[in-house]
Image 1 (tube, one colour):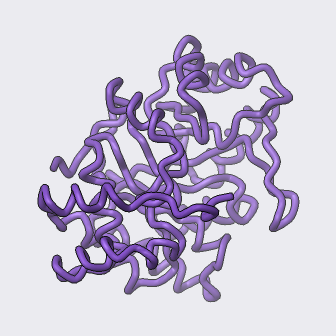
Image 2 (spheres, rainbow, N blue to C red; image 1 turned 90 degrees about the vertical axis):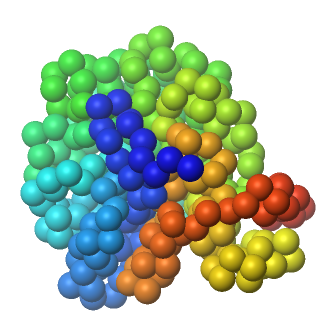
Length: 280
């Protein structure tokens, strides 16, 4: 199992960190604690951190800049094109002028002159896809973005997008019990495109699986660690980004990169599939 991956010209460790929880979903109550968790991730060897302009309405990007700038070898990937007018609302917004403005604001908040990886957070069905892609391609041409990625796309959308811009990553929901985007992962594997699963650890639903808990016990690991290790074994292009606001959970997640699963264990994990109704 390879532990590193090249995303375009970026060389990263294959287990990253999703920063959303530091300011968004179940955020850290104390800002200094959030900064400490972000720094601990880097100290533990994480060199790929995922954020978005919608996380805390820019606050997540600002916190990462405060904690880690200048970033050195750490790649900060951010996303634009998904607005959050309220905690329960997520609305795609892909008008080219908006995407360009959002990118400029991310540059400012992250304190960089160029974003290493900028991903379209969601495809806006109300705006021609080519126009959204054109805005991203223009940002690359202007030197403000190094690489472009997409989030929550189909194989058809990914294939279309590559006609307009070089797509180096895809960020779709995927984990041991939720394999809806299996075809997208297979496409990315064949084409050498990084696949960044969000919600890489099922939100507690894996507890029903006797196979998973038994394998975790055999391996001397937690079910979450086995879930992350399975993702790393699943394809050499997978880069899980487990998020947490807990220093202890962060250390546990990072340690999953060292967990080697046997052929028999991997075969047994193939029996763990989505339980009916989990994601409906």
